[in-house]
Image (cartoon, rainbow, N blue to C red; front, top):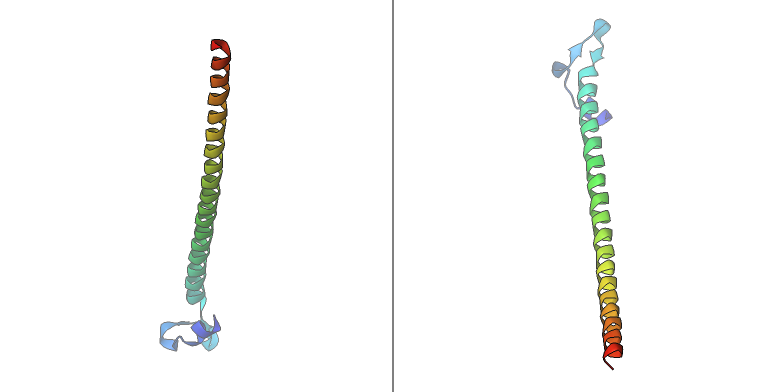
Length: 88
């Protein structure tokens, strides 16, 4: 912040009484930029969390799909065993 303020020339700044320089405009602009960066950081972190949760959800869906296949095979075997028991 000091670097940005010291790089300004006196022509770009407004003068106050007693020869003091008013940097309030510059500070407001920098604050607005920082506020924008803060919003971008929060948005990026939210997107990362959504991506991570999507990845975890994808893993859970794979596990559930695998368990569903195992349950389906077990059900088919039980029904087949039941049908063979009735026929014999």
